[in-house]
Length: 220
Image 1 (cartoon, one colour):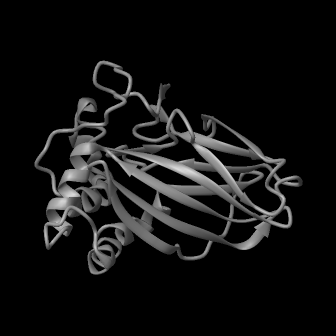
Image 2: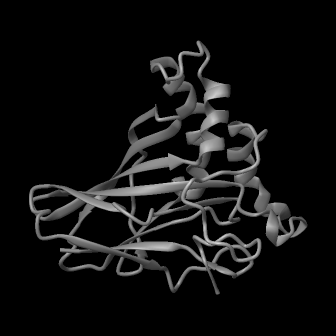
């Protein structure tokens, strides 16, 4: 099987400076990513992915229980450019409060149908979560970032359950997953003993059963 962080075109490792062909607007890309699965057979293997997103995970702990995760998306450079083009209405090279609200409503919220590309499990069973909160977006050195908090419906005891977070967009139109460095962080009471590692999710396959997405495993 092909690791999720490798491009299908020639099996070339994902570049550190994330780039893609310009000219694809963010609204189109996010919406296409959600519907392209209906016609994925029409796209040759080299057509995927189109967008690259690094997902940094912060595990939120309270009294030794995991209450949710904070996620930071770091976009590829061309997608960052198109986000600025479409949503930086006053052209000041940043996202003001009203522009952040537009991004959340018109781009980020569209990913709800795919669980915001974030799949949390405890002992292999999907953890029930609440609607994301505290959404924010900004530009840093020409790269767009999103952050949001996904609260759990009920806290999870990481000592009693195997807690994992797998990131993917199931058509592989968007390659989303942990970066090579600084992929997982912890915060809160009882988090000092926690560690994490990143590996392929052996039980999940996407894109014609050819790609194992990356999974964060949490240990406390």
